[in-house]
Length: 399
Image (cartoon, rainbow, N blue to C red; front, side, top):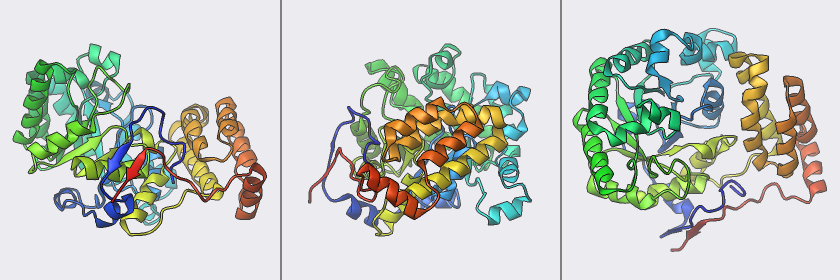
């Protein structure tokens, strides 16, 4: 299913039973759909800086993703109108991508709900104002980012900075909760600023405050802020956290690259849902595969024709949202990820990197992604590839 999608260095996970059995027997915690109707499966698309725009989210929805989080929106940017309402409003994006009325687009599957608007900032007052703006756009959940490890974010006392300063974080969170009222608030955390005892205590203080203030769940990334994205995540941290707090909804994040990883994390850590981040860039089929496994069906990799169809849809949505010039730039980082699923991955990746316009993009698609199954089968045969058989290294199951 997921060959080539897990980077080198990610540790193997020894499972007590087969992935298929784990998935088919898993039942979502009923508190999740009760809190957010439509959030009906134990996985979702994370907020990804520079990636999880309306185009990526709508494509994920087409492939079975039950819930999405926006990339982090700065409170000050929202308050000052810097990005503009069109870039943040999920209903306007869906209307523009469908070029019709909202109800018609929803009927056609262009519905970017349920969705969390992720907000990040420093000042409690500005965070409260930003939250009010997001509420006016119809987000079902407000997600507060206390996890971003990017250096410029830390320098400006945002994101992961708060894990070293829990009192400041609690002030911000209290301000957001007050404005949100009955709308659910969630929080994104990392397991600490670093691995010192002081920072471990700071995490515990902030983690407790999340629930004491009435937030519905915390999504915990199992690396520290100082680690950023380097080195393996500590799933055992998530396991211990869930064991100590069985009454709390805890979502897990970190080292989820394949559909097998989704169910391995659920089984080994006890989290209630899994945040799929870098593992779904260029691979929206991970959500369809996860639903297939839960339904007892054998998941399959996307055919070349399916890949072409999804690439063209993603490109069309990106063009509507960003314009021709910006869309071709925006899509480069997606193309190199989509390429990993192609039998001729290295050549496709190089071609997407070289494409500098929408015309160039379409030329790459036409060259490597035939529009019908017979042409795709012939192309795969010519490459000596069995396009229907893929396995995932790194997950061991024993009964």
